Image (cartoon, rainbow, N blue to C red; front, top):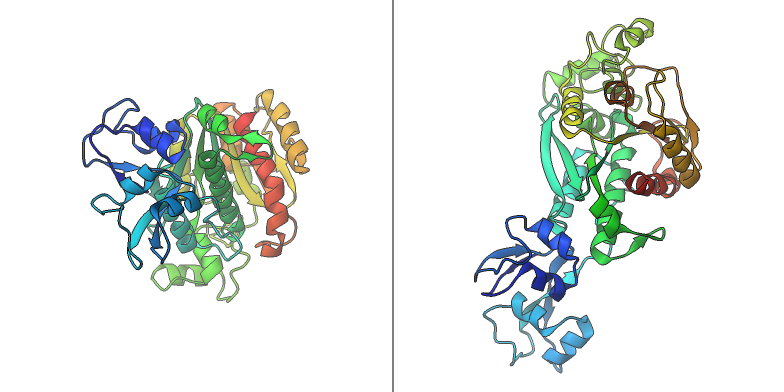
Amino acid sequence: MKVVSRKGDTLWYFSQLFKVPLQLVEDSNPEHSSDHILKNGETILIPGYIRSICEIKKGDTLSSILFQKGISLDCITIMNQGKELSRLRPGEVIQLPEKVRNKIVNPKKKYDYHAFLHDLNRLKEVYPFMESNCIGQSVMGKPLHHLKIGKGTKKVHWNGSFHANEWITSALIMNLLNEYLVAVTNGQPLRGLPCLPLYEQTLLSVVPMVNPDGVDLVVNGPPDTEPFKQIVETINEDRADFMGWKANIRGIDLNKHFPANWRVEKERKEEKVPSPRDYPGDTPLTEPEAKAMRNLAEKEDFDMVIAVHTQGEEFYWGYEGLEPSESERIALEFERVSSYKNVQYVDSHAGFKDWFIQEFRKPGFTLELGKGINPLPLSQYDTIYTKTLGIFLASLYI
């Protein structure tokens, strides 16, 4: 929510006025410091709020509105600068600050790139301390969005929808973010954990949708634009059903496309040409989505990465004995808080988690959420979310 400062206002004062942690107000307005005296007319962002409209009814008074809404006089004054508030008449309209206490994201729907962008833009508006930048583009030119929340030196990265028909992971991650943002701004604990200390100690990095072209293909069918329509129809052998599609729009499996024993994976896979699933490509890291994730990991120097997939109700945390000793401790905690089975090794190579462990010798995890055939039905969502929330919080505090 935007407000306009008056001469002598400070970020500290706005923090007290709207009952928002000062750290969040500062992070939403990085061009100002908390003790900086603001000039008249400067635009300040107040996180966790939206503007609401109140029409004055007969019998309403300023005092009754303040009591009913639980806000101070100066809250209304700063929201209605230039309006005479001492003589309100029925039919007049004033603006009030409304604290956002409920989630914005609706995860229980087919979650394509458009739905993701809609939720992302709304979250950015309400929670301006969440940083957002583009780390690259998909084959079809869709921006790949990277989000950062928190101020700590510990860096934890989550990503979803490496595989197209696992789009439920993007909906899940966006919902986790939304719940975390609500808790941080409102001082609410999650599962008994106070969230502001997590925000202060951990920088959370998220790429919610790594493979937007593939997600849109599975959810909405073939694109109208060429040459991509012809490419996917040829790869899919003119079958109308794209539910089994895991790859990007060019038929390359992005999670078998990293230089971690890539050649082993290449030689043993039956798929020797672009396919709906499992084709590792002609060489590693040719695809822009995989390149963007490689570049991000190299730039940010994460302490831990978590790649979210479906299905199996288990997670993998080792690779070729290169994982650090602390990975086992983290895996046991993830297992405790989720009931998912921890599996150290699985006979697979060339995945993002595999490459991260090989390259950086730091903890990396692949979560396999839910059970069944991908794409998993939304009827499983509540169970999946409950189990994953524990891992999400543990990744921030452990």
